[in-house]
Length: 341
Image (cartoon, rainbow, N blue to C red; front, side):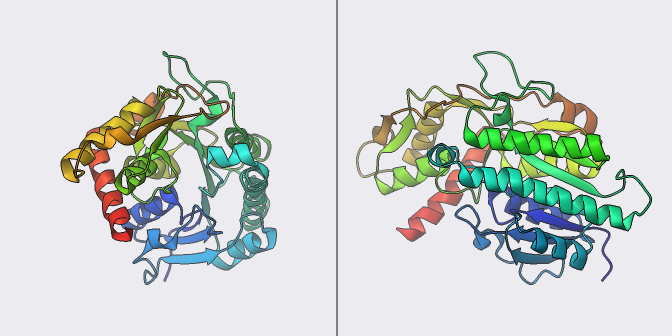
């Protein structure tokens, strides 16, 4: 079978990566995706159930830091594009031990860039790196640090990461930028706000609230619960990624947000209120389980994203309201956690 594109997706068994693979294969029937994932705690092949028999999909278990493996994948599958999701992303884990974050997020990104550059230039002998080949690096708004009560991150906001996780992602962003400006590689970077939806790791905020509520445990909320995040439904993010990958200008960065600013306590009380209606307790409310715990070191106060660039240049807007997205998310995790109970 001839393919229009053979795309290497890294970290495709994770939350956003798995949702993107399904989205992209539905939209681009003539493309092949090679999914390289190490299957650490954040990766789960169950997120991709049903794709095993798809002739346009190949899974390879492996580490992006393995230069020989990555090189062999480029050659065997004639990779013409990379969409790079693979990353250590749990902030609390980075505070306890940053080693894996430095290894995967920085060294792993360099491994991919170096292999892509070498392979693609070998296919375009005598030409510059400004080719049809594309490297899309998926990153986070956490690289910009913390906002106060007003204002928004834009593509021109100076980087000011405050955790080992966000510092490692900032470093990987700069590596991608350098390969464009130094070598002419066709790169794009997207930085997104907090995602939510199906297949997110159970330790993340929204799945944790649902899981703890249904199990009868305390629902831990850092500090006073007033830290604010902008929430983006994962399917909306996948549509944005598709547009940036296919139509984004080489060398540019695009911010993707959901226009849904909520503080952590509001998230918890909203979820508990919805669970009270759909899966009521024998007595009392799930809100009774909310417990305030010692705040995370260096906990950024607020993130908020101005996504006017991707809106104006590529015509993207989030479609899912926070209310409808949260209903879908609660239904997904309620079924999942109650089946395990």
